[in-house]
Every structure is written in C-alpha cells, then in structure tokens.
Image (cartoon, rainbow, N blue to C red):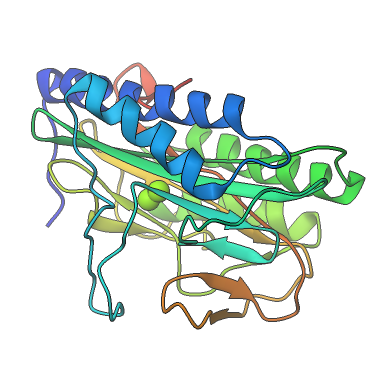
Length: 255
Ligand code: MG
Ligand code: MG
C-alpha cells in the first residue's frame, strides 16, 4: 500500500533528510587516501547522535541477509555496487567510493547516497559518477503529479543506457516514510506512461546504480552483504529522498 504524506509529514521528513545530508557531507569531507571505511562510519554515527537521530541501517536484517547490518553507512568501494560493510580497509589513491546513509528522526526516515573518488581520479570514474548524477536528476525531474512510476524509471534508464552502462538488475528505489523501505518499488528502467500514477504526497527514494562494464549482473561477496559487479568493473550509486508536491519534486535530502 502506498501511503500519501501530508505537508506537515513531508516537513518532518525534510528534517530527517537534512540529518542524512549533513552526514554525507561530513563523510565526503573526511574521506581521503589512508582513511578507513570504519572511520567514515564513525563520523556518520556522530552526526546521528548530535541530531538525536537513529540509524535505519544498523541492525537491519532483510530476508536475504544472514547477519544484521553492522554499521550506519554502506561503504561500497570500486567494484562494490551497494551494501558494502565499512571495514578497516583504508582508502587508496584513485578509489571510487559510494556511501549510502539513512537517518530516523521523530519517527520519519531519510535515505540518500553519494559516489566520489579519492586522490587522483580516473577519468572513466568521473564520467560514471557524472552519468549517475545525471540519471538521478532526470528521475527526480520526472517525479511530478501527472506522471507515472514508469516515467521515472524510463528517465533513469535512458540516461544510463545511452552512456553504455549496466543497471543493477532487481534493485532500484522505493517508497519511504515512517519506514525506510515502503511501497511502491521505483525501478531504474521501465516504460514511460506505465505503472502507478504519481500523486501529491508520495515520497520516493530514487537511486540509480550504474555498472561501468555494461552488464546488469552482480554477485554477493563472501561477507553476505556487499553486492559486487561480476565483471570486476566499477560501479556508482547515488540517491535522494524526494517528495512529490503540487510545486514539483522536493528533494528532502538536498545537501
Ligand atoms: Mg540508501
Ligand atoms: Mg534507498
């Protein structure tokens, strides 16, 4: 069931979204060659504590997981696409990092992700990240009353496929509200004019996941969580929580 949010609820979700935005900004600023993923997790955890917020990631255990998620961020490096566990791994020159972060504040959830490079970037990585951001922007632009879910999916998919990248099969965005994952699913590829009509008060997490090598397949790493490309190519993942309003899309996790 898709729950429509009131304007007051959307304002409350914006507050949760801004905690997420602050955490990602802090992580981005701290990330550098030699910094460990666990240190980045601790920085994000501090932002949650200061805001009086909790983590929807920590202890999360969906049906596919054999262990609860042990951290407040997902940190996915190079060929890791999403759900990377922050380990003691220290970032190296030229790494491509995707950080996914969520917050729960006053009963409402926010969810957002960024991709960036550390040290001297590879031009191919910058192009991949730029395309992911453009796909996200196109998806958000399509998140308007009168459109359908398929219009968002089509907008994202078109940007990715035109650039020659793969899209992680089976994974995409989702509704969000009191819980991080709600209906409806928001696929990263689809047919325009199809699917659920978009209505004022819907809040969606829109999140393209791009695979540089052009395939759509992924594998689960031995840790049971991290999803990696099967061809060893690099991946990017960006995400915003977006409310559909009469004035157009409102990005609740805007940094
Ligand atoms: Mg996320
Ligand atoms: Mg999400």
